[in-house]
Image (cartoon, rainbow, N blue to C red; front, side):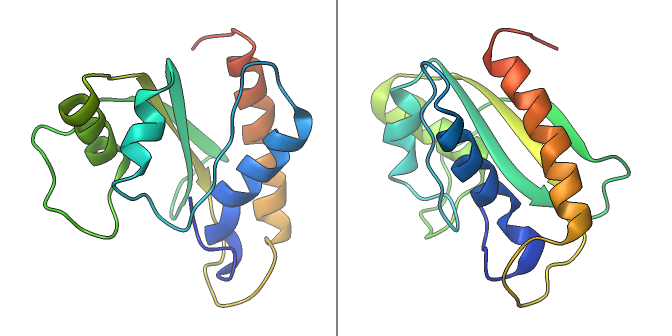
Length: 139
């Protein structure tokens, strides 16, 4: 998720596009500016879901951690966080996939196209880790 028109905010979208091109067996990719209610159905249809997003202020290239559904159903909004999407998947479809967040360090979120050079470097490291995870290596 993220906005490619705001430099490194597009790290999540770039990750989805690059993973899609690698055509990993059993891996589906989707990218949006933000998470929506409709994403709960997509999550409910998978065993494992990895959300990828840019973050500010991270001291290392990326962070990978387990996600749990939110404690309650979110107020309906045009934008949701991953925990809220998981809570909706559980409430609406009775499915809670194993879920993870890959947070990639962003360096500039100014208006503009393209990732920064440092964002590209950190995304490469994060995707290397994610590809190994998707092939069965677990933290």
